[in-house]
Length: 267
Image 1: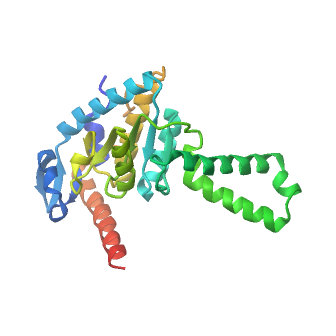
Image 2 (image 1 turned 30 degrees about the horizontal axis):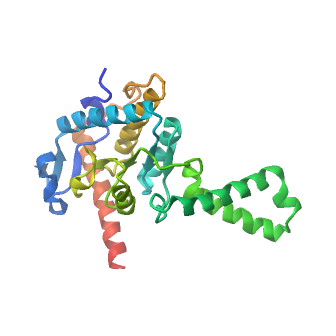
Image 3 (image 1 turned 45 degrees about the horizontal axis):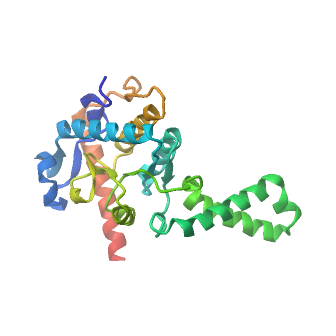
């Protein structure tokens, strides 16, 4: 059975790109048409690209490799964490710390600190060996560390691959992966440079359901490679959505994201 279907892609709005005026010309080969000023991605290419990415992740997982899931924007945070954990991989869903890959040993010192604080919290040391104020500060430190590196605290070596949502936002992760020769699997929306990605999946990287679907597929591949039985995303629980009805909703989401980004840039 296919790891993903055309029906699922349509239901989650995977075909909706950005406003045509915001496109990256390098994405032209992946664009099917333009509709109401919005670029529509070629989902036939999405299907084949997803199959290739799935096989790659399954193979590296069979050989003991782990995938680092990266997606720090709000729409991706929950799916990135959930699917990375299900895949037995790692994740960064709040902030990419510079040097996370290229200076892993330094990151490991922060991980060690996080584990020390978690241990002290678990055995009661924070409450017995420190004042209430000191314990509060240490817990605050622990929470911050957990938020930023909790998803990689068990990553003792470099990942075999990265799965990235929104390569424009996560450019630091891509730069570090490139320096180290780590393959990158990523959703390529109509506003990005696809040449930065090893395994390119043309798809909407703004809609929550689209992000979730592809994160599930990558996690399924890892689960299968690890000896599990996942091989496809179950479509029975997917909501029936009319493409025409969903069109305006998805476009509004993208326009809102773009307007916010513009405001932040101007500020």
